[in-house]
Length: 244
Image (cartoon, rainbow, N blue to C red; front, side, top):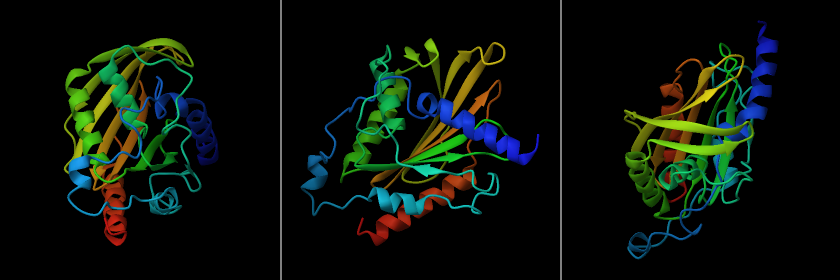
């Protein structure tokens, strides 16, 4: 397939499946009120100012910085999720719903979403950079770890109807302040009966949380670790300059 055709197909798939894959299959419900900092952290000193959406956008990858992706194939947008709810009902397992909320940036004070249209793959990848009020990122990551320890599967309803997803926790990379990796496996009838395999790597860097997603159908892909390292380093540097 020619590069232009692959890029167009990947962009189309990303547009159609983005809300289901990166936006979550259930209602985006806030686990805690947005903007409410952890009291123990807030009382220990002056609150740190979280990064804004404009600052997060500047930290995303630009054309030419991702050799694995097509030129012009790494679009950045403000997510339509965040603190707002989707039209889908919550999934069957509350712990799994918490995972969906966090991996879509619910509760963040600002977030940006980037799509990666890979040169050698019709299935796209994606990232969400989310900034949190002082103390909230640590609390949110603890909620994620706790939920991953108890969520094994859930039932939900998306654009293609009802489905059942299995959660498999993997060894997280040594990056950022803390990191976890997991996969969401959903049987699908795209072309022929196969399994849609969404790999997520979630990294906390200070008061930000970065979510990296790699989609595959009938396979098992992983988001490039070198890109994760570069993105996390940018988040660290930006917070240092921001007084964080």
